[in-house]
View 1 (cartoon, rainbow, N blue to C red):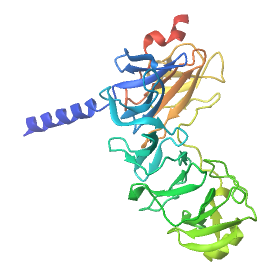
View 2: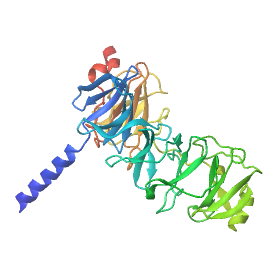
View 3: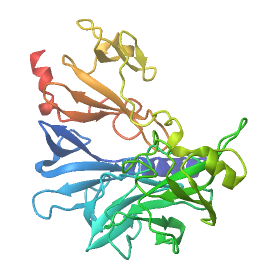
View 4: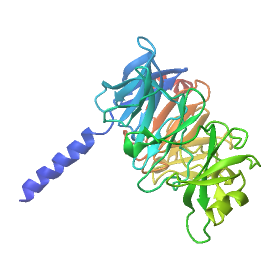
Length: 362
């Protein structure tokens, strides 16, 4: 029995290891390449001109600039392109969180398509100009079993799409060019989504993608509850809209933006940033305003050597500080550094040694 369990453990460990990404993009002198974790270049510069990390490094969305000028999924484990979709990614929208799933808006085959990696694309009945991003949204801007996606049409009015119904557009809404969300207030718990207001640009003076910092106005908007049952019309002011809900409400546009926790830049001056028990960022001895990546277990030996580097945390679904993304100032090189070894070899800069030109001065 003990031997059997040992074999099972080894098999499971092998499967987990095999599912780690093997290929990773990096940027050198303004061009994107993809390297193997063994340090060799897998796809050289000039093939792709952009990339987007998908589902914690399961894949990347890359744009082929040589043949098709289209975006497609590139499997980070197998190193193969996949035919889930071929079109143009809506980069302004980016990753669209819908519950525990992530979708991407593509323009493909003359229409809009919504794609969650590893599943078939959902082709929509029309082509939308843009889908509103929700990267900066509060977690309570949807209901537990119902989500809302705001899609800008080619006439600059909106549709409200329902992901639980394959992104079907909600029917029987008036044309509107601007909108906002309505929350109930609470002294003890989180605010609860209560409804929506729909109106014109003049009433709700927001730019595309803007969620906060929207001025209230005396212009009239149409007010709905969370089921889009019309409650009436009111001036776009919290006092007037509260009267229709018969309780005090707050408009999302008047709220303070949530703190930025994803992909945080590290700007600590003269202060050590501990990444884990082995790696840390310490003030540079020659310029205390700059940070230097060192190995604490090796008497603060520099990991990257000389050079001016900028650092930011690269966030995953489970960890806002999962790994580092590093930019070298002079060459503009951008690459990942996994200080925990969660996705890539621990403590190894994910850029080929031949591209680490700053080491030539050591």
